[in-house]
Image (tube, helix red, strand yellow):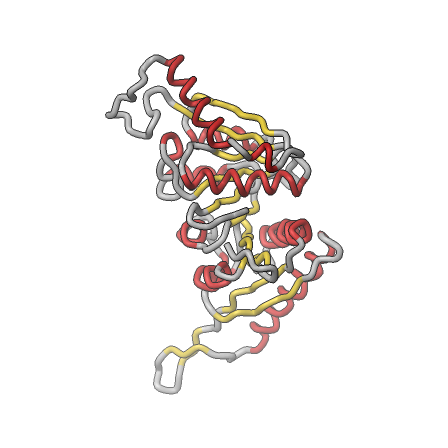
Amino acid sequence: MNTEAGAAVVVGADGSASSLAAIRAAAVDAVERGRPLRIVHAFIWAELSGPDGGIVYGPHDTRMRADAERILAASLVEAEKAAPGVHATTALVDGNPAPVLLGESRHAVLLVIGDRGLDGFRSLLLGSVALHLTTHAACPVLVVRGRDNATGPIVVGVDGSAGSASAVGFAIEQAARRKTGLTAVRAWDALDVWGQRDTMPLVSDPGDLEAEEHRVLSESLAGWGQRYPEVTIQQEIVRGRPAAVLIEQSQHAQLLVTGDRGRGGFAGLLLGSVTQAVLHHADCPVAVVRSSRATV
């Protein structure tokens, strides 16, 4: 994440309803952070037949670019309506959405995208683009989905890994800005404490296992209460599979925060089914925070 004073909140725009929801969320976040907002539309030229019969790319019909500019203009209006006083700019960038937004993330404090898009953002959460962004973006990625105007606490998944440590920092900072509470959740399964059903844990008594889970959760949150005394932190140990637990928690949250990779119940968070399940089925926006980037 770029922590320089001028680093912006970046949001992808394509004119879809999902994109407009992302723009509203990004505008509010930018104002809360005291950061500028950069609204980006990835523009792909139409394929044309060249004089030699080959494929060339170019402005055969300037109406396409005019449409793109109208999308940005409407997006700017939406941002200013959602967060009066936001310092927002727009950018029309040639290229495919994934590489364009990945490039933007290198200079951003946060990248915001909608859960489904049109044109260049088609199939955003149905194929490789969303997974690519959440895996490789150089800053946290906020995927806006679920309930409109979701309320409740910030929920963060905790497993004691470096990834969840970064997620905790991001989540409590969000809770402080939004003046709400933080619920830190650790999911565990007595048969799968470290994500390996063929490896028996050193502690096998269910009571001892749960006590160990409480210890890991408490250690993961150590120091944050002193740093953010205004945030009420609630700890929850939930027995169950991580994806199901997080999706259930999202029904009562305004934001769900996860790390990029985990251990224990959150193993392979961005590598397999857990991330896809959360991104597809969470009932509130989801923020994915990479462990290799400091968030606070």
